[in-house]
Each structure stands twice: as C-alpha cells, then as structure tokens.
Length: 459
Ligand SMILES: *[C@@H]1O[C@H](CO)[C@@H](O)[C@H](O)[C@H]1NC(C)=O
Ligand SMILES: *[C@@H]1O[C@H](CO)[C@@H](O)[C@H](O)[C@H]1NC(C)=O
Ligand SMILES: *[C@@H]1O[C@H](CO)[C@@H](O)[C@H](O)[C@H]1NC(C)=O
Ligand SMILES: *[C@@H]1O[C@H](CO)[C@@H](O)[C@H](O)[C@H]1NC(C)=O
Ligand SMILES: *[C@@H]1O[C@H](CO)[C@@H](O)[C@H](O)[C@H]1NC(C)=O
Ligand SMILES: *[C@@H]1O[C@H](CO)[C@@H](O)[C@H](O)[C@H]1NC(C)=O
Ligand SMILES: *[C@@H]1O[C@H](CO)[C@@H](O)[C@H](O)[C@H]1NC(C)=O
Ligand SMILES: *[C@@H]1O[C@H](CO)[C@@H](O)[C@H](O)[C@H]1NC(C)=O
Ligand SMILES: *[C@@H]1O[C@H](CO)[C@@H](O)[C@H](O)[C@H]1NC(C)=O
Figure 1 (cartoon, rainbow, N blue to C red):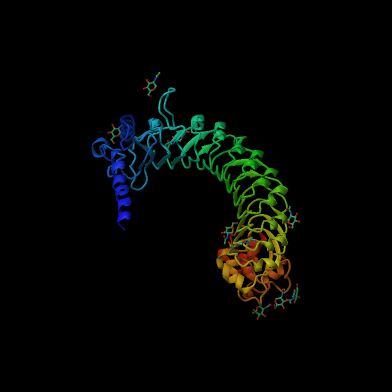
Figure 2: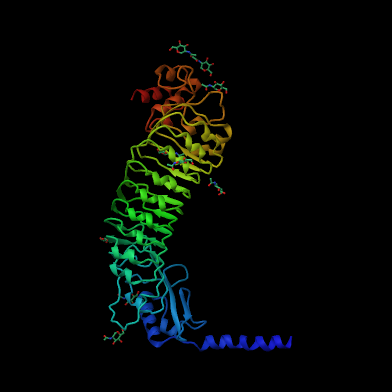
C-alpha cells in the first residue's frame, strides 16, 4: 500500500502543475482576440478571458491543446449555435482566423445572416503562420448572406477531412482544385446555387464516404470517375439539372447504401453495373425523364429498404422480381405508365409500410391480404388506375383510402365499361369510377354522387 501511494502521488500532483504552467504564445492570443472582436460582441473578450486556453478561462466553442512546443494552441472554434459565441449582425467572414497555426476544426452555423460577405483567405508570405496544414474540419452551414464563389484556394487545406458548405449562398462553379483534397471523407455542398458540371476528377477523392451536392443547379452528366470513389456510402446528387445516363462505372461503388438522384434530367436505362450495388438500401430517383420499362433487375438489389421511382415515365409491368425485395418498406411508383396486374407476391413483403402505385394504368384485382392492407392503412395508394378493382368479398379494404372500387360483375378485369359504372351505385359503383378521375378532382365529391362520377368519366 505504501509503495502504491509513493508512486501515484507524485504523478497526480505533477499533472495539474504542468497544465497550469502552459500558456499561449502572445501572437496567437492577439490573433484570437482580433477574430473574437470582429465576430462577436457577447463580451469584452480581452477583459473577461485574458488567457483563453487556460482551464477556467475558456468559453463554450473554443478548444485548446498543448503542442510539441509546450505552448497551448487553439485547435477548435465554434460560432453561432447553442452556447457558442453569437455572431454580430454586421460580422463578415474573418479570414484572419486562418492564421491560427494549429486550428483543426472551424464551425460557423447560422452566423452570417444580414451583411453580404464571402469566404476569403488571408494574404500570407512564406513565413506567416497559417492553418493550411492543420485544418481537418471546416463547416460553414446555414449562412444565407455568405455569397460568391467557393474559392479555388480551398485546396490549400491539405489535411481537410470534412468540408461542409451547406445552405449558404455560394454560386459559380465547384472549383476543380477541390479534387486535390484527397483526405476528404465528407464533402457537402448542398443547398447553394452552384452551377456548371460536377468536377470531372471528383474520383480523385478516393477517401470519400459521403458526397452531397444536392439542391444546386449543376448540369452536364455524372462523371465516370465517380466509380473510383470506392469508399462511398452516401451519394446525393438530387435536385440539380444533371442529364445523360448513370455511368456504368457505378458498379465499383460496392459500399454504397444511399443513392439519391431524384429531380434531375437523367434518362435512359440503368447500366448493368448498377445491379451490382449489393449494399444499396435507399434508391431515390423520382422525377427524371427515364421513359424505359421498369427494370426487373432491380429485384437483385435485395437490401433495398426504400425504392422511389415516381414521375419518371416508366412503362411495362411491375416486375415479379420486386417480390424478392424482402426488406422493402417504401415503394413509390406513382405517376408512371405501368400496365398489367399488381404482382401477388408484393403482399408477402412483411416490412412494407408505404406503397404508392397511384396514377398508372394497372389493371386486375388488387391482390393484397387483410394483414397487408391493415398494416399500410392510409399509406396504401392505388388511386388513378382505371383498370384496378377490389374483390367484393375482401371486406377489409377502406376503398376511399386505397382509391379503388369494387369489381363489377361485368368489369372484373378492365373496369372500362360505362355500364359497370352506373349499374349499381349502392354497391360502391361510384368509388369504382374514382379510377377514371385521373387527377383526383372528383375523389372527394363522389361519395354517393354517382352523377358526378359519371361526369368525370365522360371528361
Ligand atoms: C458592428 O456592430 C457592433 C455593435 O453591434 C459595433 O460595435 C461595431 O463597430 C460594428 N462593426 C462594423 C465593422 O460595422
Ligand atoms: C511575413 O508575415 C509575418 C507575419 O504575418 C511578418 O511578421 C513578416 O514581417 C512578413 N515577412 C515579410 C518578408 O513580409
Ligand atoms: C445571394 O447571392 C446573390 C447573388 O449571387 C445576391 O443577389 C443575394 O443578395 C445574396 N443573398 C443574400 C441573402 O445575401
Ligand atoms: C441478378 O441476379 C441473378 C441471380 O443472382 C444473376 O444471375 C444476374 O446476372 C443478376 N443480374 C444482374 C443484371 O446483375
Ligand atoms: C434485411 O434487414 C435485416 C435487418 O436490418 C438484415 O439483417 C438483413 O440482412 C437484411 N436482408 C437483406 C437481404 O439485406
Ligand atoms: C401517392 O402519390 C400521389 C402523387 O401522385 C400523392 O398525391 C399521394 O399523396 C401519394 N399517396 C400516399 C399515400 O403517399
Ligand atoms: C373473389 O374472391 C372470392 C373468394 O375468395 C373468389 O371465389 C372469387 O373468384 C374472387 N373473384 C375475383 C373476381 O377474383
Ligand atoms: C352484365 O351486363 C349485361 C348488360 O350489359 C346484363 O345483361 C347482365 O345482367 C350483367 N350481368 C351481371 C352479372 O350483372
Ligand atoms: C346492387 O347492390 C345491392 C346490394 O349490394 C343488391 O341488393 C342489388 O341487387 C344490386 N343491384 C343491381 C342492379 O345489381
């Protein structure tokens, strides 16, 4: 026991001693104060926190670490969120901040709101201190008045692993130089006004796990080099103006689990390589002018949980292979040109909770079991398919929710007979007419008003 104390006590007493004796270099402290004064009037920083890296003197949003030079250095600064320093209304981007030589992480969240400012870099000479080798994470998010281009100088930050410039007001091209930041693991430029093409050499960022360029105005095609991003797990290029087809090279993205390409101008067949994305769980590609038959090979992507291909001109029938997608919880195929019957096997997809097949040209008897219909409830939408009908002995459908009428004795397969529509209104005939009201105009008023249903049909 005695030896234990002898060994431990000196170490315990040394630790606080050594920490409290470390200080900052005066030049770094001065730079920090200048940055704080230009950004935040929360307090008089020099008076309230004269030695900002010392224990007890720091504030939420600053982090310091001892360097090999036995000085304390600022390694992280956060502005604008929670307990972190609030940004003054007239604050502009403090390029001086990049002369803090040990800065590793920098966050400006909801900071630049009123006064227009741009991301800029200090003028330096060869001996000036800078963050170019130290910065690993730069996050400028939700700054509506942060305007102008993403500077090509962004590539100076050789160690950058996370670059988030989401929800600002950046415009112009994505600088090609960004593709030299080969340490990047996450790149998020979403929700800006960026134009031009996705950089051709984006594939050089071979460490990327997440790439989000969504909600910009990027045009041109998806570069083939994207296939070199062998670590990619999430790719979001949605809501741009991208055209052409998905490149065959995507076959190499073997870790990809989330792919969103919705709301673009992509067209044509999905390449064969696409069906080798065996880790894909989310495939969101609504709102593209595809105009091809719905590919049965999608049934090979057995991990899919969410499949959204609405509003894209798909034709043909719903492939039987879709019934192999046992983990599927959401299937959105509304507003296409799908024909034929609903595959019976869809009813066995035990994790499904949202199925929208509305506004197609499907026909036949709706094949779902009571359990399936009950589980999906209002998340089952079959409206706007003229040829679908429900077997009258399947009493478990809420036909108003599902949007399909009963099969008439005379119209069990096509539902296109005018006679079948008017012959028996008390038997759900008016709801059957729902199928003729392609744009849902009549679905609410029809109920008992067989006349309006007929009117719709004649339209
Ligand atoms: C910004 O506003 C603060 C008060 O909120 C004022 O003290 C400061 O001088 C202003 N700075 C500039 C550059 O306008
Ligand atoms: C370079 O910059 C440092 C600090 O930024 C300054 O002290 C030094 O005088 C400058 N040297 C030259 C040659 O301009
Ligand atoms: C966003 O940038 C545009 C020009 O690119 C400019 O006209 C607009 O004022 C900026 N918005 C804000 C909030 O500064
Ligand atoms: C789909 O899977 C089947 C069986 O595993 C395989 O034979 C076929 O080549 C796959 N198709 C594509 C396009 O990958
Ligand atoms: C379905 O999901 C479960 C649980 O997330 C997972 O264990 C299983 O491997 C998945 N099935 C397929 C075919 O990916
Ligand atoms: C199905 O898609 C249509 C668009 O065609 C939409 O109006 C409707 O709300 C969707 N139904 C469900 C249950 O999500
Ligand atoms: C409706 O269901 C009953 C009972 O399951 C069956 O005998 C009949 O053939 C079905 N009718 C149609 C049109 O599918
Ligand atoms: C089918 O319609 C014809 C007239 O189109 C009618 O004579 C016949 O009775 C109907 N059959 C049934 C089962 O309602
Ligand atoms: C209409 O349906 C009711 C009840 O479902 C039935 O009693 C009646 O015979 C049907 N009438 C015709 C014309 O089919």
